[in-house]
Length: 274
DNA sequence: CATTTCTCCTGTTAGC
DNA sequence: TGCTAACAGGAGAAAT
Ligand SMILES: [Zn+2]
Image 1: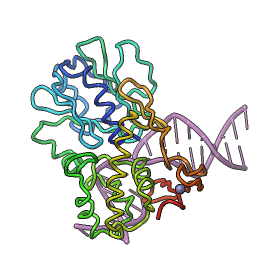
Image 2: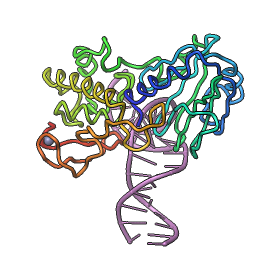
Image 3: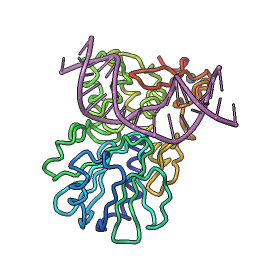
Image 4: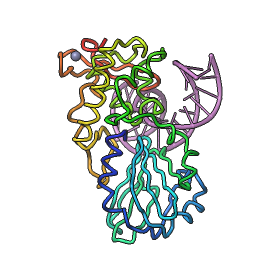
């Protein structure tokens, strides 16, 4: 699942290939992925526009286009966005293709077709639900222990559910929520307001460490994730608990357990996490 | 408002 | 070997 480190890796890969390039043609093979406006209007609005900047907010990619408009892409579950040579694309799941005024094309591939595309005038970006309401990101200046304490103080929901709430923290998904709780030694179903100050400190540090390591390792390819060159990441070799049900905890050797929390697979060590 | 559950979506995999 | 059912989860909507 593309989370903050995966989307940021893609952004870094693509930046030099698409910034200052012009979009010369748009192929939309699956129109329903374009959520706003219609696919035809979308094509008309981005055609001939130059890409001025490539930014990321949480798990969203923002292509800042000429004319004060922004193309917004969310990869959701199985979305891939990669650069390729024109005429050299072989991808049965390709859904949208942007042709550039270079010899390259920007390919959007998505096996399960849950991804979302929008184009909006910059002053209307707030209409994309979830984008303007994103909470502070891990590793950012406002992401502090006292911030965590404040948002968890009066919340009784399970800590893992809250870590997945993008309005509270921007960029965490299922893999790094499990990994962060494992590193912090916290049981995923603990009520958020039951964490003491030591645990809040540990969780804050763990989230930053987990995200930082995932960035260094260019993301986690558990299954579908690919970077901006359609290559796999490396962080899957450094996971502590995610996807490791039945295997040994790297800290204590106990068997990793998988439960369901908030409708999501949740992995933890019963010996290390309380 | 806070929290939980449901829905979308389809390739892959486990199991009979 | 071949078919079916379970499984994966981000985010918004709906329900509690
Ligand atoms: Zn352990």
